[in-house]
Structure formats: C-alpha cells, structure tokens
Image (cartoon, rainbow, N blue to C red; front, side, top):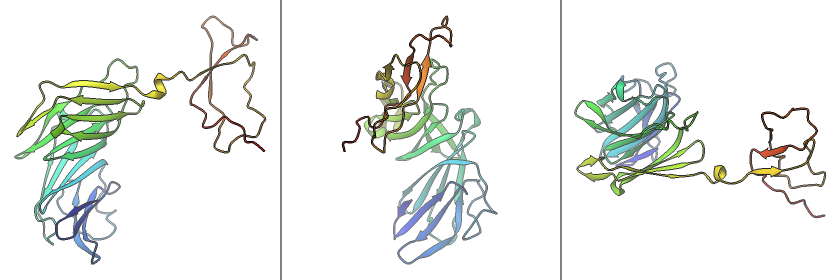
Length: 265
C-alpha cells in the first residue's frame, strides 16, 4: 500500500499484477487498474482474474505529488515502470516501460524498491541492480557481479536501499548480508568506486557439530520443553570407511536445538 494526496490510496495485488486506487475514508474505489501487463488502466472493477494474468513476482509503489509510480518485477527477470499522472482521476493515462532484455536478471525478481526516482531490484541470480527511467527507456545504471565461487550461488531474499547515503544492501538465502557502498548521488548516480562488504551468517560461521560416540541416533527420554525438536543429524564418514562399521561416527547437527534443558517437576 502507498498513500496519495487527498486521502488516496494505492494497493497492489501480485496475484493479478494490478494496482487499485481507492479513497478508504469514504469507501470509494476508483474504476480501473494500473496493470503490469502493459495494457494501461484496466476496465473492470472488483475481481480482475479474467482480465489480468501476468507473471509478476515483486512490486513497489511510490508517488511524486499526484503521480503514481509503480515498479514491477517479473518471473523472467524483467523490470517495468508505470507512471500515472493524476492517478486518482476517473480517467487516467499511464506510461508503461520495460527494461531491455540484455539488462534482465538471470532469474526471477524477488524484491524491488523505489529510491527517489530510481528503482533498485534484487533477483534469484544473486544480483542487485539500480534502474532509472529516462525518456522512453529504462536504463540499468549499475549491476552487482554474480558470485561464481559457490557451486550453487546464493540468491537474494530482501533488499534495502539508501543511495543518498551511498549504499544498498541485500540479504542472501544462505544468511549472509552483502553491502555495496560508494554510490555518489549528485543529480546523476556515480558508480565508479563501488566497494563490497560481506557479513557472514552467524549460523554458517558457528560450530554446529556435535561429537558423539553413539552407534545410533537417540533422543533424551526426560521430559523436555514443547518448543524443542530433535536436531536433524547428518552422518559424516571418511571416504575409506565402511557404512556398516561399528566404530563411532560424527553427527553434525543441521540446526541449533530450540531448547535443551528438561522441565523441572
């Protein structure tokens, strides 16, 4: 949701790829939608499932006075921007622009945000990109590099953008936080001196190994807290050892138990 002047409100539906306009204080809904399919304002009001079926994965709402700003992210990695002047009027004209195919994310766009007149996106490819609409085109002003060191590159989950303060950041699905800093915003965005700081996940950096001489997996018979679950154990053996050997094995906990202290009677 995003508020507009004169008690207007923009609301987005990712399922249908539309933005609706309403006046929540008096219960009125403005007819038509701002669509992610590029067809301008929809004609219907109410359930639009017969009119819209876009492959939208992310949306960000913004405004500049009475102009509504919508940034869409798609499953195929594309990014689109919709600008609608006098958005709360009954009859509206929207300007829909998609990015160049060569600038797409290599995977679905998972998060998108407005930062002034620029759009910042994060994708399944582990990249962040900064976009700006200029005239009739969307330009990719900056793109982070893909992490090629991992067998399975981590994916972005959530982004935060503060270009005026010189940085953007992203949380990855492996728990790491990556911060790109060095952006200089003076009218145009200067991206010539970008540095990267990676904050490693505490989960990954901690020692979650449990050494045990048990010959089989067991769980304490004492009564424990309800929130506790048995940890998931992964058996690790050397390449030359037999899986049927009776020698002790090393058990590696896949996560930290939620609670381990037994309840006192």
